[in-house]
Length: 143
Image (cartoon, rainbow, N blue to C red; front, side, top):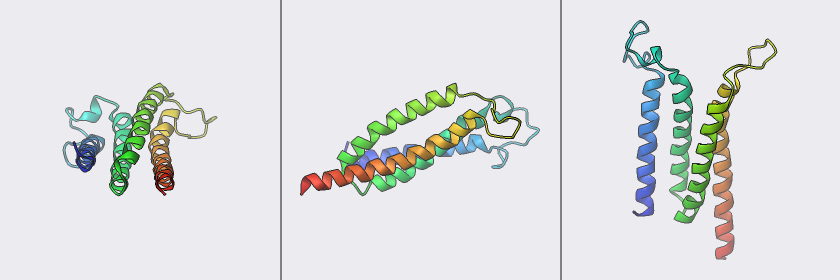
């Protein structure tokens, strides 16, 4: 499969996964069910803790793939190794994090909620740094 085809496939996959997680995140807001509907997803699962990080990682991936489309395949391969490792490690830590706040009576978010927000943000920032650094290294070695 060619490089641009890989990027397009990954972009479409990220959009689909992000879209599905968004639908599960706000089914009432989208009019798919009502708050009193016993068959709605939020009655049976802690869907927010599952779909929020998936949606945030999908958004970050969509933006990063758009940026990577301007670079060569070597940078994509370098970034994809980091991305796969980061997502697996993030999922592990989010899963193991405490559901309870340790905020000394103050309404702080739980460790899990904090990780749900921080890991996609850090993923995005570190990815940008790695892409820029790798691009600079490749340009330097080519000249």
